[in-house]
Length: 380
Image (cartoon, rainbow, N blue to C red; front, side, top):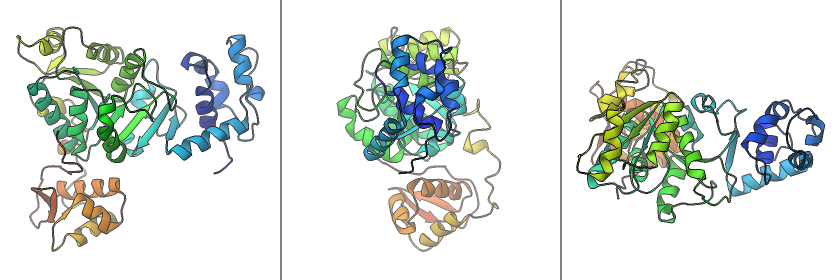
């Protein structure tokens, strides 16, 4: 491992120190950002005029180069990524909220951070109606190129992730615990699927157990990533209201799916509509708000666009046969995310179409097809 250290490395290591929270780190952020590559101890870059408590100062002054290197090596051994607010890949939307996370631990495809995002939230005890609507919205918005963000909780969150996993838009799960802690435990399979085909993030150090206070903090990140928040089903006193509060504070759009006036699970969403949230009953209601982001509305993906090397390679593979997504990845030797991007662009040009069972075949007819890229057919 390279021994060259960046301000991000020092910030990540400092954030893992016991008793050092976001407020303290925010006060010393300019000092960390100005750290030179050859710094040996934080003692050299923490002047007396920085207003933090004596105990926290003494603790931070102990942070040295070897400890920072040890944290980097520990994360690498565990296969955990980490980015900070200093990094270019850190999403602009999230950076601009009132209280952005300074560090994000990651598992999965960081390229999803470059996609337009929409979050879907709701009750942990949805009706069958709520489950069906959520899965449908997650899948179809993913097909439009949006990355679907949620909190991997039971109910609506899980359905949103499952729907989006079937698309090239992908899904991002924000945890209210350490990145290496699966909560709830019964979502172990979902956690693994998102880690492989999507992205998992957490602002909490690895190993951090879930606590009630962490979930409202997580919700501000769910909405912070997103252009807008979609609430499918929520009771009158739903935790989703905290996400909506964060969304409104952050200037995000709020959408709500109407439900039966007799259903307790729809009392919260119906009230949101009365209070001014945009009522939505179809995908078009959402994508019409973001014409520059939806794939079906974008220019620049025309049939006569130049074929890239990856696209040409996939066309050669399926010239006289039919292949699944995983067969294309294996035969081409390309990373899964590159196969997903290439096959989606070929579909949008009408050069490839998808058949039942998740198979892809080459077509001669020009035209726009549904932007679907099945990665995982699991729906239960």
